[in-house]
Image 1 (spheres, helix red, strand yellow):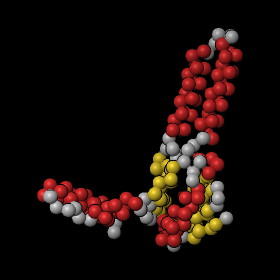
Image 2 (spheres, rainbow, N blue to C red; image 1 turned 90 degrees about the vertical axis):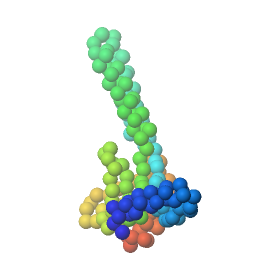
Image 3 (cartoon, rainbow, N blue to C red; image 1 turned 90 degrees about the horizontal axis):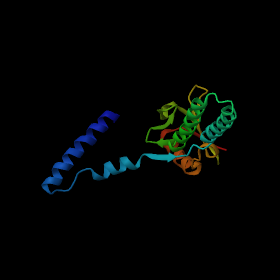
Image 4 (cartoon, one colour; image 1 turned 120 degrees about the vertical axis):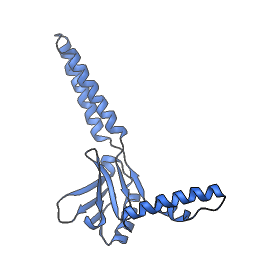
Length: 175
């Protein structure tokens, strides 16, 4: 079914279930809505490397600015820059990257936007102990999910993506 049709069926089912609940009857299609919710898996990571680099840059500017304070120039601009580096590091640390595996597509956040990749657009999935790679069809682009850089659980992610690949006829390479 098309996604819009599925959403319409879900909305109508919810409305009918509310009416049936008021009437004291059992809900309809309760199992199908629970299975749709279970079909989506989200694997969250933690961005550590880039926030640490930003913190080090902030500390470097703080040290350089404190040397410049002796001469008495640029005190406010220096502190503002240091605070902004620390704030950006905190923002990137607390905003967790993720991989969402759905029935026929995967999604992640890239460049501050949620990006989707349909199963028909994936050429192959490469699984290893520390890295999971999704390669586009006909393009040199690929999505890389690393245990070292973003602290993903690559074993669980690999198992879910292997099942996703099997259901969507995508080549899986184990390294």
